Image 1: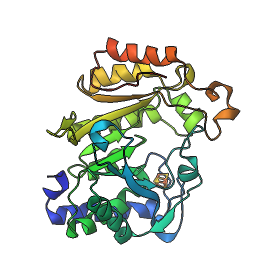
Image 2: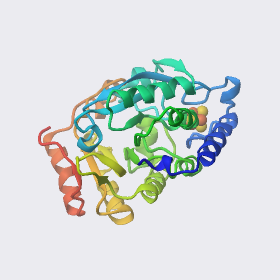
Image 3: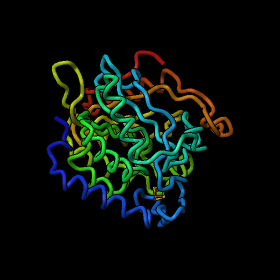
Length: 302
Ligand code: SF4
């Protein structure tokens, strides 16, 4: 049974209400724009009061225990709190492609994905729509929704927002993109990424712990960290693996990703204008090994 069904119904509604109030002076992510999204203002992410969805469908390309055999019910949300120069989903994250809907509409998508056999509902880039997702969850539960929630996030989070998800999200799937704030600012336009990202990942781990997989090989609870290896050591793999091994857990599941390619504005930056080499990926795998991090997924070839 997913965690949110064990929460008192009034508590679930209280969380949704508290989250909604934060939209009046938005501080849902570290950008802390302070805009009144309920009055039509937008901040750095460009997200408004209504949720915008680019697509929703069954997806088989996530990590094996997330996609399973029937697929993960992914809901791709428009806009993003980060401005990655190399974003592969830039028409959705940066241009904001998608259609506006309300909490009832979002709840309908969740229920449709359940009826199509999804193992979970996987909110992709959810941070800036956390209040609307909680509102939708209340409605979806009334309609019989009972799938685990996957929070598939850039990992650029603030503690008060994450605390509202405690006991609601079962599976956290955060990125750890950089160890260095200078690189995060230059390539993703965010400040103090490392501190917010590390504190966020620690809090996620406190809430859900190491990954738990059921007898059918499907994730039911836990943390999976995604680390995209960028060219030239920009992603700070050594520091991130050291942090995970020493401050999170040796049992943490890591998805070490090799699929970087120069999308969006990356071609204009010489250091980002190429794929990674097999040697760079091998180095990242060797670092994981050296820190005793053996759980998760690596790719066989670059
Ligand atoms: S969610 Fe958007 S508006 Fe709110 S603080 Fe973050 S970037 Fe600003």
